[in-house]
Image (cartoon, rainbow, N blue to C red; front, side, top):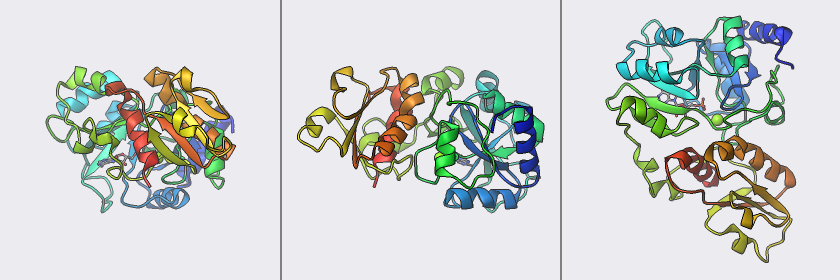
Length: 313
Ligand code: AMP
Ligand code: MG
């Protein structure tokens, strides 16, 4: 449905009735639900087939609204929110005591999204919204309204806001500890975050080198085809039945053959098109996707992470 005034009104109505609706954010499309309605959240987990241990991020319209959900709002949260909100950064803080006990963690993850439709919807419904990616758990995240409808045909309403600008999930930072700790690399670069808070602790599995070892990361963001992360996809594809093998690369020299997705050598542009390219390769019906190892470096961390998880079996 068009994200016009009528669409926003209808979506807000569904959310107030403790139903769900999908909407665009600058990262990926989210499956929105009143974050503190047990009924609405159960519907999110049911539709996504999401394991119940995986916590949700609460989307709000302003930093003040986020702070109201926190028991404590540390200096790092204040600085990061001031610099990057609205934007693709989620902060994990201690949960305010007045929030319904969830039986989950004593923390809550909060974010102010930058997409105008997401912000308009938050204002229209006046509710804090959980909005995990609007796709079946483990599969490729949606970056267009059409991706959502294909993955979750039973969602009552999808607001169409066009393709997502970043196309990669938010960066998640835990600010309950000092120095803050990275929980998930994402659309906002580590360099940008370090510029504001100084040190940032990385989880072991994301340290350089480790990110490539299979088995460390659980399966997520995965296409139907088997994805292999390799140094030289062209050589591996030689001799294979071209109909069954797809290639994902940022190197123009490799871009020959039947199912080749040539992505940008710029990490922001690569990220914006990554999930759509995986959707296209799945649509082409290939059995294997040979994904070229992307360059090293902070700017490619989120892409390494997503490709590694997509390749886990
Ligand atoms: P998403 O699937 O984009 O909604 O993101 C959910 C992710 O946010 C989880 O998989 C965690 O990485 C992170 N997250 C959300 N809430 C918390 C929390 N309270 N503590 C730690 N990580 C969290
Ligand atoms: Mg997801």
